[in-house]
Image (cartoon, rainbow over all chains, first blue to last red):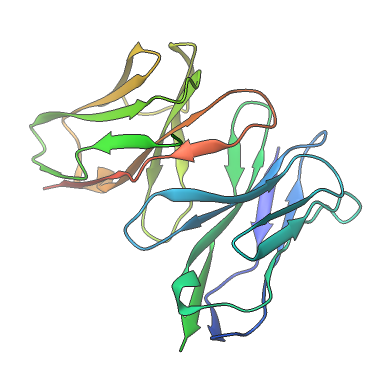
Length: 110
Length: 113
């Protein structure tokens, strides 16, 4: 079945550091891919998405590129802020539902 | 407006109580979802409604009963819950189709005592 694998956290960075959170997927066909972010005590917010191979999703300085050849959708940001501290979920749209990765906790220190 | 509104934000209920969670969206989305999320875990799908009809029940215990009164509203009726049902309950909606994203509400933090 469809599945998403994310790098384990927590990931702890200093402010202005470069961020990469790895995400790989297994799916039949060509699913749409998403990154969601969850701040403490809140619901999930869509951060960015890509619907086909080589698409780049971007939002708020975050980027991810849909790589079909490596079945990956890694999240990157050039300079993180303390306010980026949250849990990040990679997800794919399967035939009937969203499939989530386990989530990666990001902690940014000032 | 890309908002999904859930009420209440917090709920404490006893094991013999009956309560309901409510969810509303005005984006014209035709699919609505209930998820359960435990601490430090991803959301787990419970139910999917498509065009106001239940299309997926992920083998959820009958003490959880969903209802979709119209295309904008989704309820989750709770009865005789157990302490292990304590979690964040998230509602989401989507336009439908393979490429569309889901929009989530802020959730209801449920504690069963």
